[in-house]
Length: 301
Ligand code: GLU
Image (cartoon, rainbow, N blue to C red; front, side):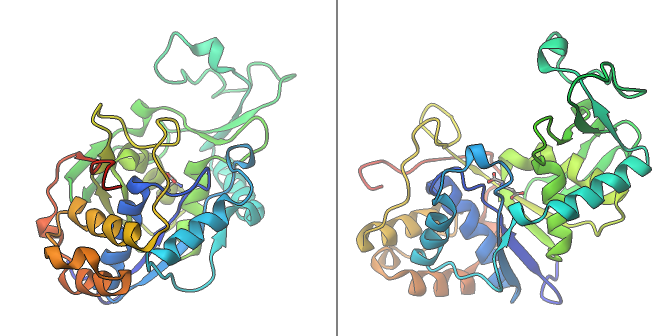
């Protein structure tokens, strides 16, 4: 695939806490893929859910990216400033009858795997606050794409359910915001963790409904604990190192997690040297299409 003509990638963290080793691997993979293609690499802070985003977490993340030498292009986009764009997109979807208000609570449909669509033809309880849902059965389906690592993907969004676009409390949902903003930032390539692979069908269905460009996708193996859990704040994934020695080692370990087989002597080099090598030698062919990578031992972290 020739990406060099035009490539715009992005790293889009939710500032719910500092970056951990798993997020470093995602950021690094996205950065290397963009830089190796002589592309742009943008950062977007996905701060649409203030209760989940402690004060200062976003600036910590930006500082962590700088510490690891992951320099981005242009201004950072902040999702908390994007209300009007999301509202416009929701209005268009509603006009197309691809979005609808829903008063049902999770408790009401707990016996089902996905929301059964009771409000599709009219809100069940007009006196209750409403969320807005995607009419996944009426949009484009099935959704088909070639993931650059995991290959052929096909999903029926209707089997995944009518995902929420705007919550009852008025907060915007990730699926809508990510699609609107990837288009606004003219992103061509999404490189992110495998945990988002099954979100991609909704996102592609939304892109199609809103007549937005379709993107290329590369989902990266997830970093997991020895128990097989994805690293997260919930399982107390440690924040990235801040000391020089720790930063160098973790960056090296992240290159190893991406199967780039960096030469051993690189492990003690500063980020700029490691990244210079990694961009020049970035090889997707080396990356094994397996779902998980074990977190490196904590003694080294
Ligand atoms: N904000 C999402 C997260 O932190 C990632 C969004 C994306 O890469 O599409 O998990």
